[in-house]
Length: 265
Image (tube, rainbow, N blue to C red; front, side, top):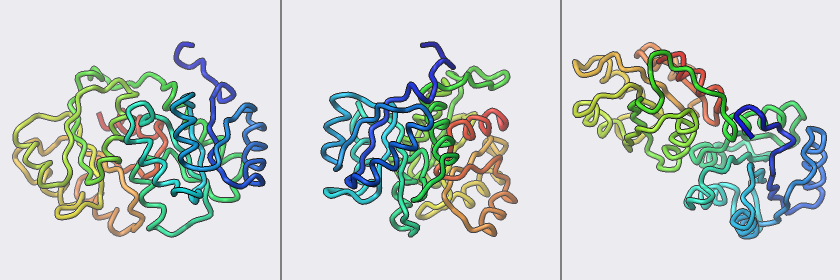
């Protein structure tokens, strides 16, 4: 199929859920949007084995599995070259940040509440299509493959996920930094068209990094996109005042990230 021809009904979904009752609930929701042939797994090990045998377009998992957590399942996927790019959606009634933050950092495409609505599922599936079959990006005078991007995040899993999303837009040239100090050194040594940074990092956080970039005599006008799970409005307002070009929440839809990158470039 060419770009734009894949529909939600064409997606091959692996559902990881130990409860037969919850399996039926999620499958009914999937059937309503046209997905009738989902694959089932009841634990993390079985899910990984199934993915290696038949790579799905999407994994939908609960947070608590008999042998591991949904976070550990996603981390295991991100650690295997064959599985690292598979989109992942979490369904959970969990609201505590310490349990959800690892999922956000590892690059979950969406976190759906339990119970979720049909609309919430359709939006998450639409985001999956944006990643599996992305629309062409429009970067004005920039050629996507020539855009030099610096990704700054203390989480290697998060850097990998952002890189995967940007790669789906046709971007190819990436440099990674684990913190703000490392990013500043790289900015002094190389030219970049775009900086994508996290907010919460040890040492120098994203706000201080933006402050230092904007007050520097080296690339002070480079576009900076902040991708963060930070919810404190006063902190985010301070980041905007510091001169960030755009802010994107974790987890994010690929189409949202693409539109922000298109706008700031």
